[in-house]
Length: 103
Image 1 (cartoon, helix red, strand yellow):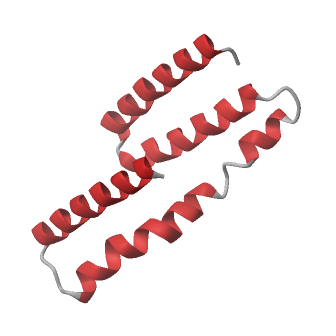
Image 2 (cartoon, rainbow, N blue to C red):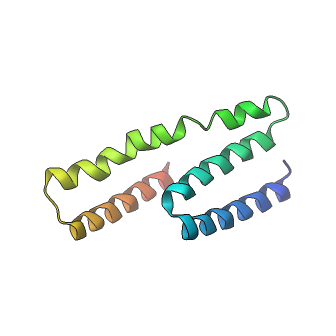
């Protein structure tokens, strides 16, 4: 895909994911983001387009396997209240965001 089309696709995807998040919630927004990433890979290839879409199938399991234990286990282990759990998860998301920016 050309750079202008790619930029338009990213902007449209960002808007669509935001709308889906507001209407349906975070789980459907995560799945639509993964679908749009797969569609982007699919459109960017000249051959084996369907393989690009299929390559996105393992990502929900990888995300759950890596992110869910640090989000859920410490609040149960330390018996944190609901408000403390929300603060802990907010801090953890901030740390992960900074790590992803640095990588």
